[in-house]
Image (tube, rainbow, N blue to C red; front, side, top):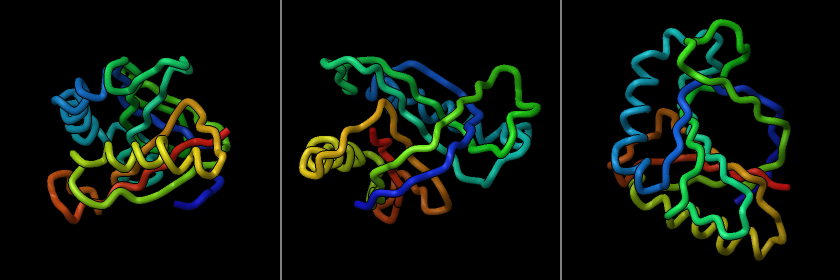
Length: 156
């Protein structure tokens, strides 16, 4: 784990409200496929990496496994000019992040999140903000043990 500061950035893509289970049971994959199919319509893409941003309600009793929250699947863009009307844009402010790379099948990524939120943040005294995101780049192979996903957890 390391702490990094990232400048503000913009994301364009699809937003859906779902629990982790609903997202993993096919909603995420269908939105990912739709996004990749239409990526040429998203102008000003910074790169080919797909970003999955997860935005949580700031309720004390929030539980990602049973409560719905916002999943935003899209591309980072350098400008918000001219993106498809059924997609949304999202501004992300400058922030510090705890970051690490999940290695292994995507189905096991919950263990990595459990470590970050359940252990690392508590041990280091960092407070999470209401969102985190994953970068799916050329190392993204969800069903492979060689899969690698970079995770960024926004910090207060």
